[in-house]
Image 1 (tube, rainbow, N blue to C red):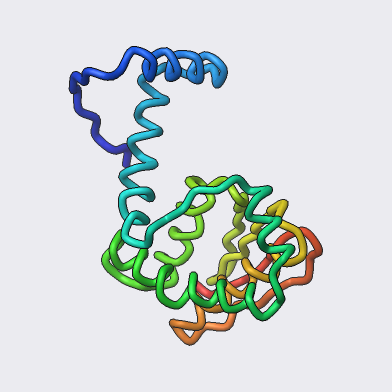
Image 2 (image 1 turned 180 degrees about the horizontal axis):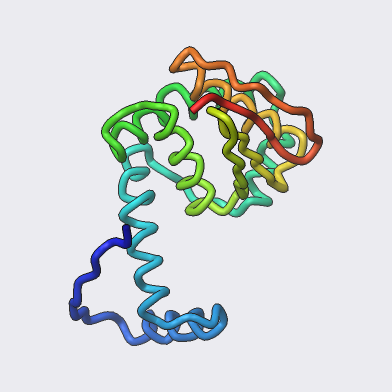
Length: 173
């Protein structure tokens, strides 16, 4: 069901408006659509992540940090992301910690942090997700451990499929 819209008027800085017009033109969308996307990003992700002192960094910078980290440090960071931050984010955003909400959390994260993309395939009581990224070997290690930790909180062990440049896993739904 499509969400309802409201009509509102805002006063914004002229320079900010010109930037919006420029980006909307580059993306071949209206300024209204772009502003709505920005509002949705705030509503669905940024305002909740403020509680965790979110820091936005470019993907290549995150890759460099991962590349320079020990395997142990990458695994520890991924577990923290899954055990406390991920779980709290989902409960704050959706009211419950469940398989469906974990999957929606991965979709939301993919949409708003731009570090990876997700494709999914539903079949006979399970779903297979493919998370593709450009974060290197430690990026794969991080994402895989993050996924494992999130579902582990529900005592579910995802079935991982090997891939060098993506994290592919299947879980029951």
